[in-house]
Amino acid sequence: MIYCLLCAAVIIILLCVKIILLKKSAREISSQFADRLENDTNNLIYISTGDKDMCQLAANINDKLKEVRQKQLQYEYGNTELKNAITNISHDIRTPLTAIYGYLDMIQKTDDPDKQARYISIMKDRSELMKQLTEELFRYSMIISDESEMETEEVFVNQALAESISSFYPALSEKGIVPQIKITDKHIIRNVNKAALLRVFSNLLNNAVKYSDGDLEITLSDSGEITFANTSKELSKVEVGQLFDRFFTVEAAHHSTGLGLSIARALIERMGGTITADYGSERLTIKILLAEK
Image (cartoon, rainbow, N blue to C red; front, side, top):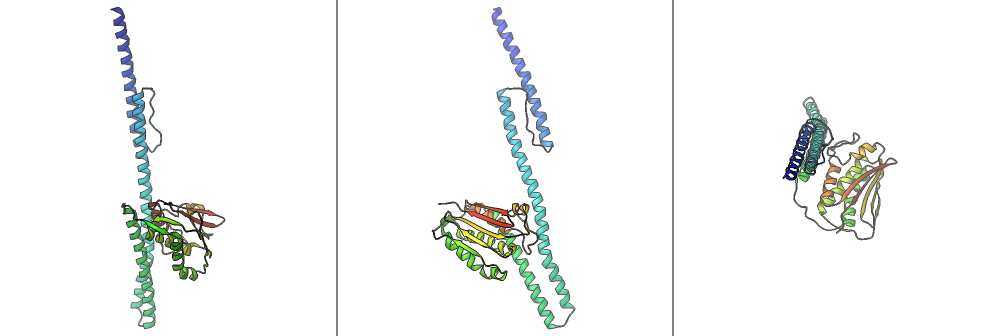
């Protein structure tokens, strides 16, 4: 009888100790949880007891805190990005608008038909620029908001690349760029969306027209890797790291919202491929690797 009472007393004591420890852990979690939410910190919740269930609870809360922190960072980054986007787009659109307004004023002040015709021609060019800027922004918004599965087909990449380069020869020639082209004889077939792939090639070629210092090398290797490389002394490694960011614009480039390469990345990733940029010896290299069938 005494033995049973002693055992019961020991059990009660152990339970009381456990309850005390659990309450201590609960208080630690509660106070730290509030602190982690209120302060900008990556510190995790820790508890002084080794209770399995309380440790699991703390671990679960830490996982959720990491998710909340990640969402917060994404929000802050997106908010900063949006502000930069508004600044860049406002500047890009305001420039031609200001020019149009100025030439309208000049037309009103002259009766010379030749001058009026020249001013109208310039205004038309500025209006076309605004149209291009707004269309680029619209295309980008459509791409990132489209969550449907992209339709794909077997595409002969060699031919698609050659067609894109051919269509850009006038623009390249105008800039004095004679591209060095190395396309493998091996048939590279990938299951992609052809229109999207052509858009990517177009954006990269357009990027070369804007940023190249006069050269361009385009390669399609036997492994299917596509490379666009050109000298660009005005770039820095920091800028190269941001080339695929939305609305990032290198100051030397005019008439661009900075969406071309971002669109290219979005399309390539939707097709299951990868696109990267590297910079060394004043040379920018952009590589595309499409997923094999």
